[in-house]
Amino acid sequence: MTTTQLESVTEQLWERWPSLSRRQRAREFRELHTGDRADFFLELSAHDQRDLLLDLPQEQRHVWMRLLAPDDAADVVQEVDAERRDEMLQLLDEPTRREVTALLAYKEDEAGGLMNPRFARLRPELTVDEAISYLRKEAPAVVQIYYAYVLDQEQHLLGVVSVRQLFSADPQRPIREVMKTDLVWVTPEADQKDVAMVARESRLLAVPVLDGQRRMVGIVTVDDIAEQIRDGNGKFDKVLELIGVTTLEDSLQCSKEAGIVCMTGIVGNKWSFDHFAPMEAIPTSVCLTSYAGEVEDFMKTPLKELCDQIGAGELHVQVGKVFRLDQIVEAHRLMEENKAGGKIVVLT
Image (cartoon, rainbow, N blue to C red):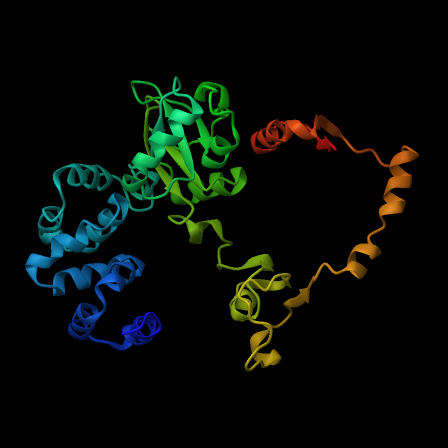
């Protein structure tokens, strides 16, 4: 089969999945191309993963169970009847089994039950260059690397540094000089709604979880609490559509009543609808608009009026710090740390 044909088979199975019996699901899953099975399995809900595992031959179950991250494996175990949980745990290797058992001690809706105990760790004395090399080696064992967490020997959280910061920093600077020490974290007992609020307000992609002695025990990513980060009904006030017409109808359905959807990108490389019924696609009271950023749009911006107001002292612009062009890395670092205290100006 060609790549296109394989993708078509997988898509067709996704479409039929809800209507298939458990036996049919297991059979068609086994018929998928080897390379597609893993991706398909990882996209399933914990409930469906449980059913599929139990319907596969005994000798194959450990392969798929060990494909899951510890927090996802814990979700699957919790889906199984109490008398069969130990059976599922035995499918895991010993280190992962210990991690999953620890996660099962927490409620499903607590940070401890949501967190992933595998995260990127660094020591403060490492240089940036050494840290990058270390993270490259550790990447396969970590599910997602948004940030690297700087810990002491007792696993206390000292600071955090984003991967983006690492690549823009001086390679010889020690991590202790680059890391951010204004920390945001939650306890293992924190409710998922509280974790979502922390993530939303701090705009973090992952929230560290610290125990009573401030030792880091895991991270909760935005993927784990996506539904909680949204408004209660899963709708949004404003939606910026960057993909284009291929996902615009989905974006419209994600908008709250009286919400606004602005299409400003065509990343999907499709410029027109095959079929479009406005009365069906656009929910009642939702506003659909677009922005192309053409020359005419730019010329309409009242730049001269703004400059005149600034020059006359009528409009005050708080300048945080001024950099030369050769200091662009330092300017970028200040922006990442959100410590400018005003506008960052770069002189050319």
